Length: 595
Image (cartoon, rainbow, N blue to C red; front, side, top):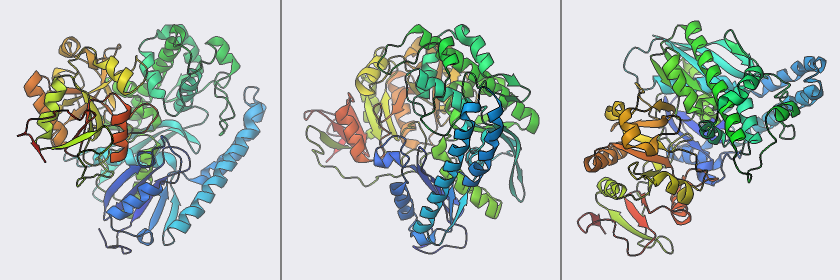
């Protein structure tokens, strides 16, 4: 990288997601994505909307740059498009189902524009030498997904289709683009837009909230709950709510009222409530009707997602598909696309939600300036690491730390004995799922491990499953998926061997959200899996994020030690330090440990 305050001639672009939710920052310099960091991992506030100050500071420090060296600040929305959308609300005054919300909708879009312009002024103050650029939200999503799919690909990539499905980006909720690699660079052209109010993300968030979970946070809980329900009970209702047309879909505003960009306006109607059930409080028991409602929602979303993916293939002729946006985190729908949409390969980037659009916005600006996509977007390990971490033998009251000489072998042996172990090593992952560097690992051979994890470690609902990680070259022994899944983005059906030997990783719908691991992607995690296979015969472990419910994935050593003390973890490996709660713990033989 160039020295502090200077550039090498190539653009130095800082991408920002700030002011909405899932704040993050990304930095591109010298033709490479240097880092992508979610602010919540550093400030401890889940889904924070704060300016990502700590993330930006770390990125600039890593690159040895000052704020004055930044040539462009790329924001993950284009505020001008919100202003243009405001007058488009006027026709809704003429429709009975939308008339009451039309003017508040217009005012809310204008307000978002004003807030966005105010953020631009703040960015200019922080980076006085930079040009501040607003990037259309779906283009940011698409650029990141495309770059992640192309990064490091040796074979001829051919054309790719890019499908983005989220709640709302300016005026667009769903988009399809065609990407083409040429000798001069990469071309990305939009071929289809679906605008608000037709929004899968809006509907899924609305039903999540109606069922008593946090919108924008716990949609995955509803996806898990859906496996326990009967979709037939509300199938007709959701077919009416989300009608499918040629290459598109719509939304019934009698059931899901017209969007107003304010938390004060409910997202489900009295008609929807009367046809389903009263709103559930978070403290209320989960009943069969809630399971059935979740099941019908999930079924319809899967149907629409497969429909959109097929349309993307038909309109682009591409053999590869990249999927992004918040709805791309619905791993069951992605699994259906892999099975039914006809693509040779489906890629979801490490951070498909809005946190990834800081990287996407930066990529879009560099692409506009150079025609090229910088390298590095295919990595998920893009945040801070602590390779020189030093701990005392008593890092906290009641904790004991010992440095290990053979950490992978020690972890594997302990896991085989049924221990549940936190793992904090290497650089922080980007995205919503821990991928081996900020993880909790457990043996899938323990029949009570799921209940123990949910009740004493994660403190979450008992029906929620846990994902398996598996050595990529042996994944076909356990799963039917015939492509890599390095970011735990795809739910796969399981083989008879997995169902019989490892039921702990199989959800009640017969699927598992898998992460495939190679030594090239994560050498340490691959070593742990190989060592566990040498003991048990199975190169597979349970992997869940290093956090407890309501808190973000641990991004700092202090947060990791907090997780150990506040949960039922048996131990924590933190950069080769074995930390336990019991002073007399014996993690390894004398030959295995060093002082």
